Amino acid sequence: MYSNKMFTQFVKCQKSLFDNSFAMMATLQDQGHQMMDQVFEKSPLSQDDSKKMCSYWVDFVKQNRENCKGYVDSGFDRIMDLFAEFKPVSSVEKPSEKPS
Figure 1 (cartoon, rainbow, N blue to C red):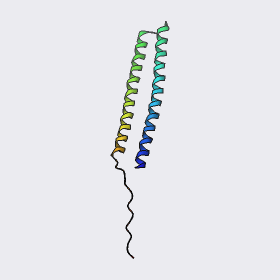
Figure 2 (figure 1 turned 120 degrees about the horizontal axis):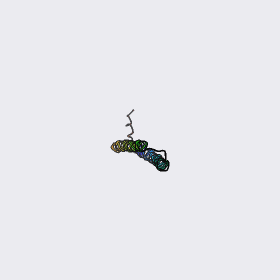
Figure 3 (figure 1 turned 45 degrees about the vertical axis):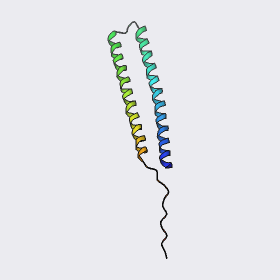
Figure 4 (figure 1 turned 180 degrees about the horizontal axis):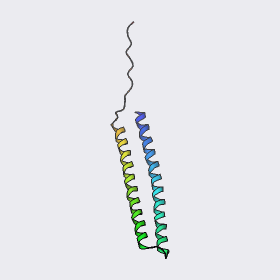
């Protein structure tokens, strides 16, 4: 019973760690995207084709980022379901004493 609770808490901690790290990575990528947009807007040398290509690339990365998050979240959900299936073990039975 205690090990099931311990493993559940461990998985929740790992999920929280992943969520926080993923949110930080996504924020950095979004800020990079905003900086890239500003460079394209301010630069007189930028062409529409290169801006379209970079926009396509950014959309592709964002879509795959969300797909990755979904896959990892479903994995964590499966692990939590697996731990929910285990029944707690009651007390360990002592072997019966044999008469001498």
